[in-house]
Length: 426
Image 1 (spheres, rainbow, N blue to C red):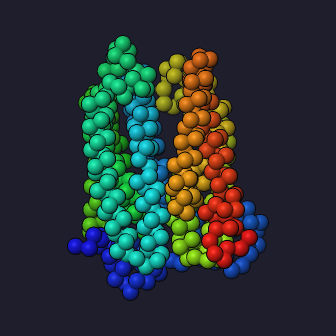
Image 2: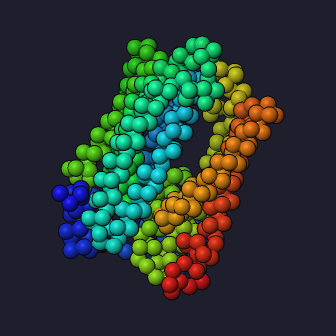
Image 3: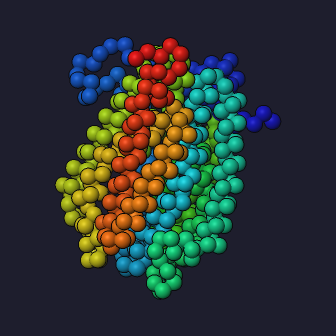
């Protein structure tokens, strides 16, 4: 065996031509488009890079939006059973988001590495990258599942839920121990999705996510509302959907070829493709695409913030009628909306720098930002600022991330700077 999946191997067999479509996807990597004419409308409204961005962004956007939308539906189901199960679900949602975010590198590294290898016509290297990522995902996923199951009390303690919390602690632990079993599937899904994005196949992840979320929705209704299993039923529905999603990705890999995070995905893929073309032309094209992605990321986030502000109290009231929960949401609502445009810029810059394979800097910047967040949380606890203080600490996290990533993006010696590589021009 040469360590490649069938789809990547077929791309390699096509004479090593990086423009040949990948078997089964219809989305082979192509040479970066070079804008040939100026749009008649202002550049901020219509840009020559928009077709390539939209081709990658729209399916990725639908894929990424599907999960939070279904999480909202699950919250509605659980919220109808009472405030305690809803609180247990919220605690675990935050806990698993934190745990899985620690392994984001599985997808963010796979996407540009696969895209760059295929751009260079090296399908064999792309296949090895994917298989290594899948193997690593299995090992890390099993370790995470074991750690969460064996250390469930400690994990909940980190989230501020002690055994003295009584029923809240018990329901939170029930959810955690069931959902943790799906950790290997989640990490496998992350690698497979990143590989398909690197192959510019945005549709398969959309289909898989839609099917998995439909399963999650159906099981959630059946187990939570119809059978009365409560928060444990919600955990089982989510775990089953995550496992089904991972199986579907692996099946696609073996048989077929193997807004704002959506823009980050487009950034990883397009920037890697442009830089893979080499020379000053590729560098300028990568920079132009990145600038446009930032415009769309910040602008789209601002529109979303305005839309949510227009909804006002009606939006949180759709999920719960508990006065305590609503009071907490109202306290942080303005700050949360104000952070959306900032978040949009951060997520796009994340994707752009990942596409440039600037992983060392991203790791160092994240450590610095995490230290700022810890300091903010300590200050919040000292001042007894409660939930609002936690959100101000999150604001410190995003502000520090924006500062470090913007500096790197603008730096002449950065991966997209004027001094990068031979022949790069200012």
